[in-house]
Image (tube, rainbow, N blue to C red; front, side, top):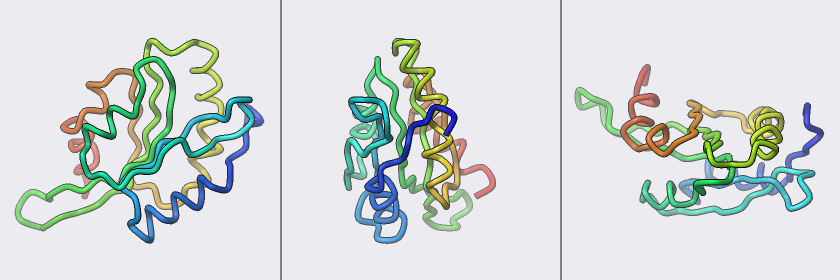
Length: 139
């Protein structure tokens, strides 16, 4: 809580729904308009990864949790890894990037059961292939 930003209870409820209830595929988090707490901006049950990427704006920071499903090589079947994204694009304002960086831990610590973490400043860093490579290691 270095930034003094709290985590809205809805963030935890939405995360539990994704993790346990599989009611959503991903959640987009951001800061409230007054920058005092982390809030849920969007929940989606769309399995379309490209749709998820559209929800990461090119000039604003976001956090996200994505229930990443992939096939394990060697025919081991489907796997899921709940993946935490820190999205801090190069075109975001410096002040926002700093606030997001200092607020990340408050959100990240409250989400128990994250299997992988991805930091992105450009779309190629959060592209499906790039994330697949990261989450499938050690799966």
